[in-house]
Image 1 (spheres, rainbow, N blue to C red):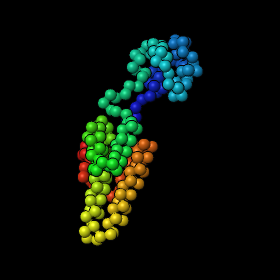
Image 2 (cartoon, rainbow, N blue to C red):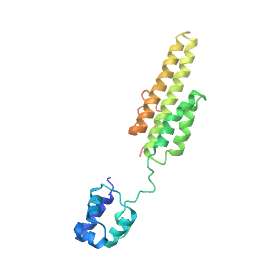
Image 3 (cartoon, rainbow, N blue to C red):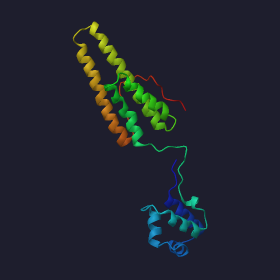
Image 4 (cartoon, helix red, strand yellow):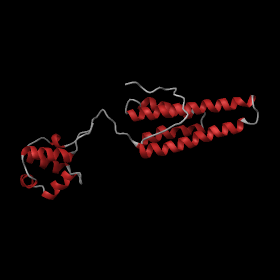
Length: 189
């Protein structure tokens, strides 16, 4: 669903009242050029300018301003960085690569659908990586000597995929964690 912008609201209200830009300028003491730039969307006007325009159109300021939905949180880069970057604590503290993102996901899952999807993906991937590392360490008893390479490959794969996804999450708000076992299934709407 597309939300209305201030410029679209101004154009709609001005045409609804039957004013030209020049007539509106005369009623509001706002320059014609300023009205043109606001309607083009080139500038974000000061609140005082919006008040003058609303008074000239005989409408409420709220009819021009675009109010954000208070129930919908804007996706913030800091939370995306925390969700995707916190698994690196697992390099210092055992199992922190699953526990830290899990706690962050639990606290932020209801705030935004994107936080929910990314949190599930991170927890699933790092849970899978932990399981694979434990299995590769147990292989030591079956194939002594080769488990070092298998464990190193799993560990390196986890680090590389995590670094790529931190960058992708911050720049494009997307993530892709391959070979994850879906421990946490997506919510059904």
